[in-house]
Image 1 (cartoon, rainbow, N blue to C red):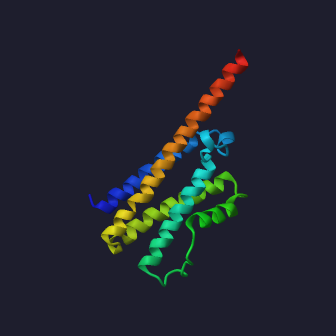
Image 2 (cartoon, rainbow, N blue to C red):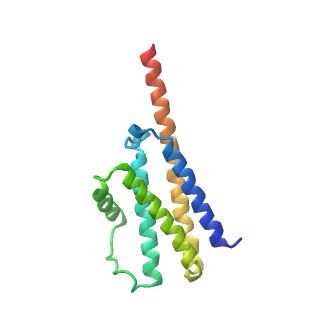
Image 3 (cartoon, helix red, strand yellow):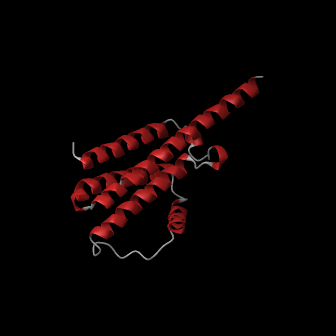
Length: 159
């Protein structure tokens, strides 16, 4: 199998695993942070959506500088904070939709432009995959923590 197909399949698998995990979050837990102020389910999806969109835009500009307005020099964290602040009022379903759209756009970009990327750029597309996986695993820990807290609360009220 060609390397770009393998990479796209890895992104698809990560996306599927994350979506399965999100379904396991009861509605009232999706906005709650995890242990040690770990990001909530909603915040994690918004963060991933932002970074996947940013990655695709960045590489589009690199491959065809005239295709998009030039991006000003920026501080990545400030840019993310500003973007996510604009999304604060959005319902969870819209955040999830933005994540799904960004995830699909990234895979479509890889399929369409893999041949145009140099070897270093191709390798750089493994970084967002690891980033997604790290956040999925952290979200799994958050879900487990919420379940433990609920069990402790249930035991305490039943005592």
